[in-house]
Image (cartoon, rainbow, N blue to C red; front, side, top):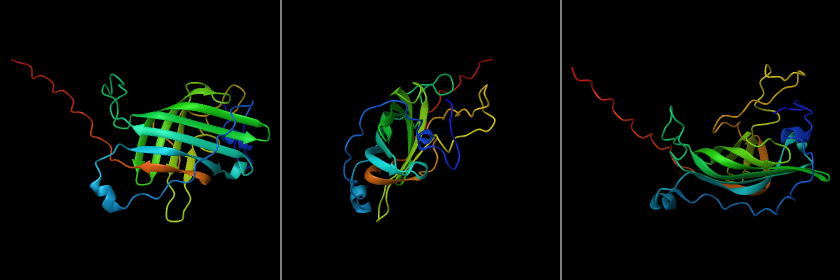
Length: 222
């Protein structure tokens, strides 16, 4: 995937993949989610799968006047994506769900929909990746990395994404010398470097599950 602009003046659209055609109008956002339940109440509840849900408009320094929105619904589903021969059972961070984003500047909107394939959490923070299924600015099959920090105690939520001013390899260029964005690995994303200005995300943390025991190798008989 070619990166058209990178740097302090990064045209806003390059940060979320340059908008090229009108896409779906951004949906109305829900109010910020309620604060995380108290430790006492959480302790009394049964264990939950790691997850992140919500929708938000963000403020991004390179696109300060643009309308940029993300909708995320993801849940960890350990060992559901076999990857033979190295991980025949899959990974403890396997996940399912959907990611959508839109980036509107003036009358033009860039958008994408993607299928979540990996999720890992820590406290109020989640990192996930999703593979593009439909978009007017991204190639189908491209993996996008997203990080989310749930807001709390008067602090806004935050979000980061793996394109624009991050995930750059200076030696990865095309035939014209233009930078090419490296592919994001599963669950790989930068710190949440943008601020949520409307809406919010709810993160449920769960420790990752230990990998299933590998079958023992039979001892040869002499």
